[in-house]
Picture (cartoon, one colour):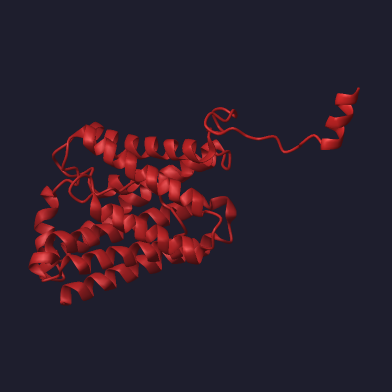
Amino acid sequence: MSGLNASLGYFLAVVIFAASVRTLLKKWPRFSFVSEFASSFMLVACWLEVQTIVEVGEWAGGLGPDVTVTILFVVLLTHGVICGGLSGNPTRVVLKFLQLEATTLPSLLAVTSQFLGAHLGLLVAVYYWSLELTDMHMIKNLMARECSTSLLVSLLQGFFTECVCTLILHLIHLNLQRRSALIRVPLIAVLLTFLSHTARGYTSAYMNPSLAYGLTFHCPGFTFTEYAVVYWLGPLTGMILALLLYMGHIPRIFAKNLLYFQKTRFRVPKGDKGENKKM
């Protein structure tokens, strides 16, 4: 139980830091891309601790799967409330760019900030483990050098898993984007938790390139390129397919609707049709 208390204190410190950065940046809209840094940092730093509880806490701390799933849901819900929606996810930034809602430079700055935040989150988590405040963290510190990869299947299966999960995520998020945050945020948190738990034996369904970079790219078993194919190309492909299915086209690339027939808004009055026939 002491290990769980230490983890809760760690979560609280990370959340306060991210919330403080985002609050301060509201005064300077030009530096809004830095908020993506804070969002990504919070997500990676907290998820790494959740991984610790899953890998070590279940057998060293006596914590059951129900506890770990609940903790993951609370982390994702808190992230959604503080950071909003899919903040801290590069696929969301690219989606806005493809929808013509963002220009090139802000998008590049946002994605760069997300990966920097993910890297800092990894460094902070490793330092926290090195303090060995509890037996659980002492064991994790010994395991940190040879962590276990989240990719437990072939590259093709991993790519397909990330692609399909990201497709589902963005399709639902696009349909919920006009709904109240009171409905949207909890539903997205539930969906992320469900997909991640369901795909635990495959890729863990991160559906987030910067999150995957912070959580599993440093683990042995696959090369950087192989990880990139699964955790970067897979989610990007799924996001593009979701946008295509939702809108019927990709505004940044082409304007013609390829999937859905758009009916004309104007109809010829019946009286005019009758007059034309008489003539």
